[in-house]
Length: 203
Image 1 (tube, one colour):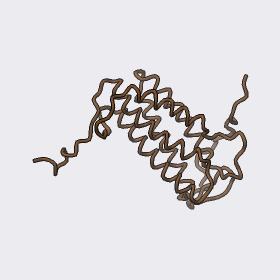
Image 2: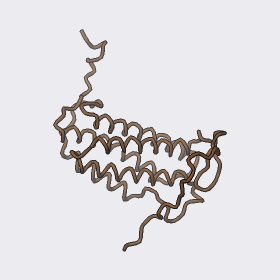
Image 3: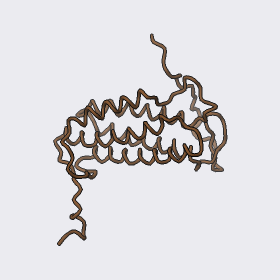
């Protein structure tokens, strides 16, 4: 059997609440106590939020989109790996600690290119809609962009792996393509932006 690239988890969740965070602090993987509203916590907390929405989208795929469902399940593991490295200051990172790498980024690029090639070229911006899965994938896209913005702010203050921002940037593009692809495979028309459908645009 080939050796695993990353260490397996070594945790024991026997107690769910510890009261240690009741004063607004939590601890990083290296044991340091930090405020719960610090940028590092905000960053991996938003990645965790994104993971929950990806799980919703995976469930919405059901049995009708097994290819996309498998991709989303993989992305959930990648996001947890990303959270692991964000929860750790550089000096405490272990050589085989879970993280995102250039492999994850290139895999997303391959999937974006392949699925985008099947789509009709856009002649307008699209709005979330048409199907529940489409809107959930757009929610994933916007949460991913928020995580990316927080990561950019964090990188100004502390060192984080460069793959962090690259991965989130590419993943948000992937969610956009997947949202369009999901509607097309299901035969559902896209909701195109029409400026004059606003109240002020009607005559």
